Length: 86
View 1: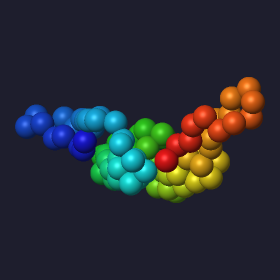
View 2: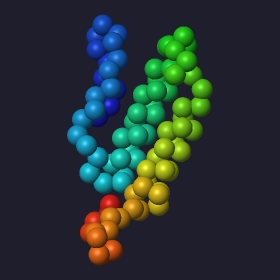
View 3: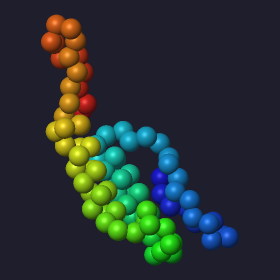
């Protein structure tokens, strides 16, 4: 995972493997945020790369790894817990 720079100046973000645990997901999202920070100054004409995307990434990480998403669990028809994200 990471930002790949080719000799011709092209930059590409490699997706790599999926996140295995909360910390690897946090690191992956931080890497994506850092890639945005590196690319944004070179593309000032792209409005989606301008603004408060750093705060957006941090809020998204907090949401995904918080109690509203990561702390969810599933129940079956008898209201028994059948799975949880851990």
